[in-house]
Image (tube, rainbow, N blue to C red; front, side):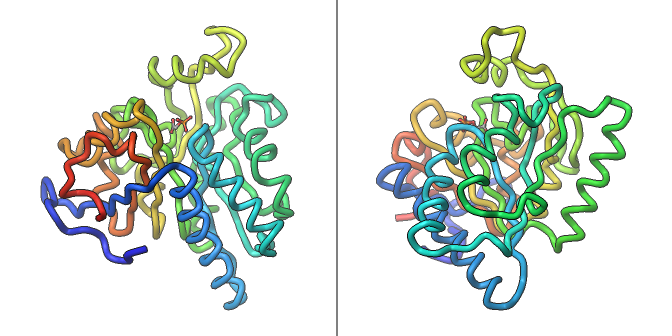
Length: 270
Ligand code: PGA
């Protein structure tokens, strides 16, 4: 994989992220999984921890399957890995089938022998008045590990990264946020009825995400094509939170062909 970002057609005075269009989502996921395993192994050789920022949703599932395969078939150890998840629904306990802690346990953590005390998912069950101090400690905790080496992201149809919905500022940190109606609609299928879809979530902020040394955004399918193109080409603004990724030095968008359908060719990796 090329190591330098593309510099063709930078917009709005920003650095364009690398845009890599893969044959399909499986190939894209395998590519990012390989980058993650290389990072983990390199850190292990140095006797150091690798710090990963992780995402939930349907998008990273193949990435997690591939990491599990690398663990089982190629001996990839996660004993030197610390993970921080981007977000969690407010009001859902860890054991709730739709909580993001539960998602991570089922889809990754319980398959890779990672020590439980090295995995962190925000707590969605705290009272509102306890949240500000908790969120501050979350930021300090990430910093105390040396910071996130590689952050995995999906993108929502609102342009959110994590649950940073439109209106999220570039200097936002971990906090409680009200979910956009479109985000709740997209989550509806996972809950018994509309009323059960949480109204709020705890999310890492835009600033938290941009502090990661590397960011790898994944997006598949035509439902994401418009928002991916907007994130790469429209004005950088809180109205389009994913557009802030263009101000990060080491971001790559890994896309399948359908998700890349509306991106100007000049922005794509050949
Ligand atoms: P999805 O969600 O992976 O389920 O499409 C992505 C997101 O909302 O960030």
